[in-house]
Image (cartoon, one colour):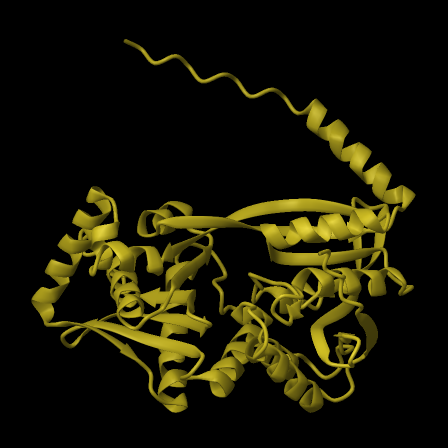
Amino acid sequence: MTRTAPVLRASLSPLLDPDELAGQWRALEAQSQGSFFRSWDWLGALLHSLPADLPPPEVLRVHDESGQLVGLSLWWRGQQRRHGFVRSRTMHLHETGRPAYDRITVEHNGLLARQGLEAAVLQATLARLHATPGWDELNLSGVPAADFALWQQAAAALGLRPQLHWLKPYFFVDLAQVRGQHADYLEALSANTRYQVRRAMRLQAQQGPLRCELADSVPQALAWLDELMALHQAQWEAKGEPGAFGSEFTRRFHQQLVQTSAPERVWLTRLSAGDKLLGYLYNFQRDGVVYNYQAGHIHESDAKLKPGLVCHALAIQHALDNGAQVYDFMMGGGHFKSSLTNAQGDMAWASIQRPRLRFKLEDWLRQQRQRLKPAQPAPAAASS
């Protein structure tokens, strides 16, 4: 017997009452399986932290035949100019389209949809946007690769042009797999990584017992966030990099996120050896997934002490012991993260374009540049 596709109705309107939307969003979250970055914790903190003079987003709601809300997303309008001649009116999924505010970096992005209706909600969302005037491109940042495949299919059916700009790996520990094979997380690592971590833990433990503590109140979480930010910024600024907390807006956003969502869904973790501080981790959690967003750890002159590795190993073992299913390192730090994990996936940065002539010209110019790039020399043969 053929299942009938659900009949869904989508609407798009300016956000007028964030408090009303918060209730709708939280109710739908309880019926969905989305990431923390699709939660009201993240998006509510973003809305609260943005300047008052920034135009609000538009809310795209999807209802089923009975009038039940089954899909939600936020879209900000913006403008882009590329290569001096490509002008584009843009709409951005869960981002503002302004780099100063999007530095917080959304990952595992996507629509909030009732479980089991994800594909149908996406199709209804894109059909509604297709019928909406005033945009040339939809920007999708940090979307899981499997989800982007659904966007591609829905776009092609509407005569739109899906464009993949970057595909970036992220790394995670499948704790369910580890739990089925080992009681100790370190046993799941390669022999070399396991040796380095155990040596570092043994050396650090000379200062006292290794401890992994979660902040148990908002004031404690905010204090630990301040200490983490100081450690993080010192580490990155020493390399000439701005760090993740280098602007007033990013600091305000994260303080708001901790204020509203710690300690249940936002975890500030302090790692120590006796009285010696090793570092802090800034993690989120939802539906059995722990997301490692940022870290700040002390600097050690002895390379064998590896405080960063020790901090993560302690936190991952804590997650394993407490029933989490995944410890997600997210993007960046490829070799470091891949050595501590047993699985990886991909996230896409992409756009859905209307069939504009200027976009076709942009594609042609990009192809010509690729053709004109000098060929890379073949690697030299290894000497015998």
